[in-house]
Amino acid sequence: MTTEEIEAAKAESLKEIAEAADAAAVEGLRVKYVGRNGSIPALVKGLKDVPREDRPAFGRAVQAWRAAVEAALAEKAQAAPAARAAAIDSSLPGDWRRPGAMHPLSRVIEDTARIFARLGFTVADGPDIETRFNNFTALNTPAHHPSMDRADTFWLGPDALLRTQTSPVQIRTMMANKPPVRVICPGRTYRRDTTDATHSANFHQIEGLYVDEKPVSLADLKSTLAYFAREITGSDAGVRFRPHFFPFTEPSVEVDFTCHVCRGKGCAVCKQSGWIEIAGAGMVDPRVFKHVGWDPEKVSGYAFGFGVERIAMIKYGIPDIRWLYENDLRFLSQFA
Ligand code: PHE
Image (cartoon, rainbow, N blue to C red; front, side, top):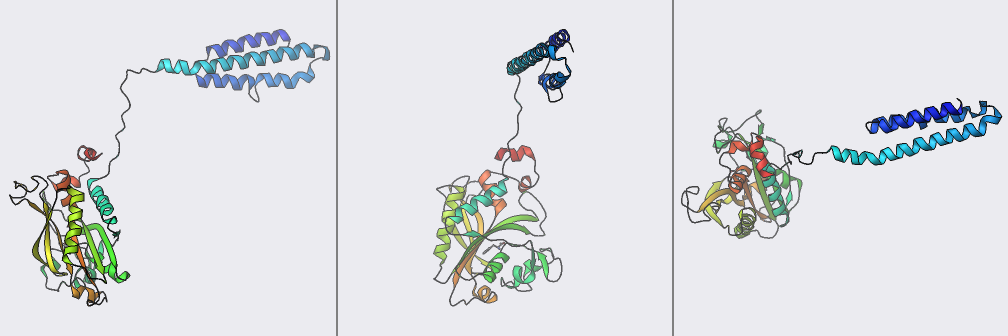
């Protein structure tokens, strides 16, 4: 190349850079002219073939070309953001991303775990498929008990079933530990129920168990559940115990919380009583301790169990249990 030819190529390259429409085009021209295999480095490499007397002028022309190209590229790069900004129409609506939300059932389980953690309870876990022993026998439920009926329980074999309650986790916890134990056990439970607005064949429970070598009383159970009631449904909530029967607790109670709708005054939701049934509970039956090999003369404790769906429906005013399973975003996004 003669110096005149270099001048012509320089003019052409500067025109190309000036006309480059976008960042990609600018980058392409950078590669073409000053990149490792670009035309300017190629000329530098060819310098040794230029007649000695022409080399200084040739070298100056090449350096001038490189400087001009680099200056043009730098100028273009500076102008680019301004050009982009001009292309943004800030009056257009934004790009809306729906935030994720925790499912109301998960929320109740997490809140419950947090509340009981303050009282020293840890979270224990057990499988959905249980043995007859853990779900019934060890819980002092005799073979003729109606809950063992084929009409109520999903049996998987003579000895295996889908757990009908989270109470078998009491058995697992005691078998695997020494007193004292303080656990809550959230999990899925299964019953042969026909689905309607308040029933599901697959629902969730949270079990609680506290056993100690120092005496544990029904008053301890009541104060613990009263604390939970206030924390989960509001500071003015109270608890009421009604006598009941469960094979694995003695005495047994049904637990009511102050109605969340009328706050105890009486309304249609609580059938004018001012109370809402929340849980089953009681003092662990000595026969249960015997089944897990603990001495009922040395230990005492309480247990309770409540439905997670029920708490969620009360807390969030959900009228139909099925809404909790349908994964309809119109419903779920309200919990975001
Ligand atoms: N397992 C009982 C039920 O499902 C509830 C319960 C748990 C009662 C612990 C007493 C103690 O109805």
